[in-house]
Length: 92
Image (cartoon, rainbow, N blue to C red; front, side, top):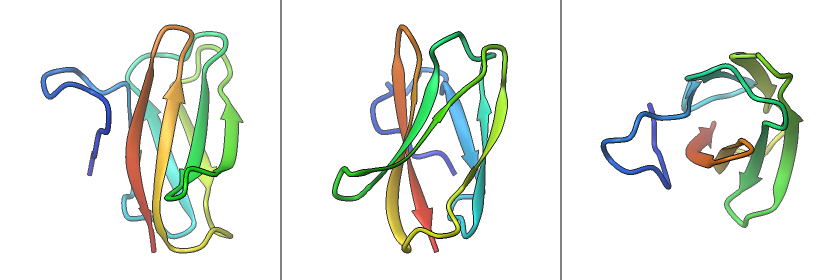
């Protein structure tokens, strides 16, 4: 499931997450290898940042642990030097 928050309908997503909904971890796949300075951040429904993960340059996949977080909606954002994209993530 991809729930893009800020991407136009016809734009290719910068990344995807699975599974969604998730329980203990999510797999994050980038459409292109990460540039230097890319990071992922996870925010709860109140906007509080609960996780930040710098991405090594050249990486195209990572796993983000969410096992100790309360259930509910979250927003995961990929930030690159030139852009950012946010997807909705549901924790069960």
